[in-house]
Image 1 (cartoon, rainbow, N blue to C red):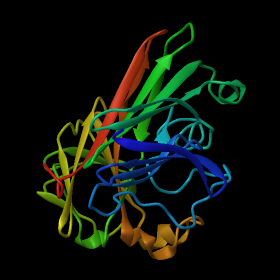
Image 2: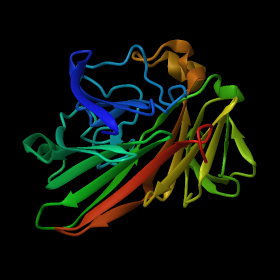
Image 3: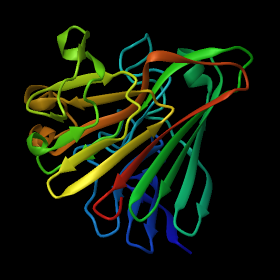
Amino acid sequence: MYATITETRLNGQPVITIHTRDGAQATISLLGGQVLHWQPANGKPWLYLSEQARFDASAAIRGGIPVCFPQFAQTGKLPKHGLVRTAQWQLIEQRNEDTLAMVTLGLSSNDATRALWPFDFALELTVGVGADRLDVELAVTNTGYGAFAFTAALHTYLRVAEVELALLSGLKGKHYRDALDNDAIKRDPQEALAVDGPVDRIYHDANRTLVLDDGNRHLMIVQEQFPDVVVWNPWEHAAAALPDMPDSDFRRMLCVEAAAVRQRIELAADDTWWGRQSLIDTRVSV
């Protein structure tokens, strides 16, 4: 077998752990259907997880890769980032292939979701772990009788040694909505984004490979079917207001999120949409 896949518990919540024979590791929480940890073979962890994160379902787990659905942020009337970040998902399938270990989690609409959003849906989150890569795919199926529209994101918290020294390239020339400037539309002229203050941007039509440089390690970020990229760091004052994150930890993280936000996705009855984000540690291989 390529990997050991184990069901266990973390901070009282059920999780799936994956250890590949190459030495890669991942942890996926059933609470929120959320990847919490990913470490490539012979590398360091690439996902940030707050040491003060809550695991009691009173709030989304701060860190890893939360799933935002059917609403991103506060772009509609639903709770911020939607309905599924504190829901309990179910393990549907696990596959142990030659070079990739995969698990699929599922979540369906229920009375609680219908009370806030009157549509029927089924979600599947498939997580693939290889020696140097993490693939996360979200599939949305309309199981109702009429069409609905949604926004979504994989709210990826990346771990960096020092955010002011990290560089994110691949967004030059792209237009973005700046949430910190009254949602003004701007164009990014920089070869690489350097974060030296609060940032909250939604880049439009950003269907390029991105590269995060973090000292002597590099991460390729590839997304499919997600047309937008969200880049977020709360910086000092906003981080201090977060009860589930140490005040100085804004220096240790940068969110680079695969998203579908600018235009809602229209999904007819019985149709399925999917979107994927792949993280590839290029220190291991390109």
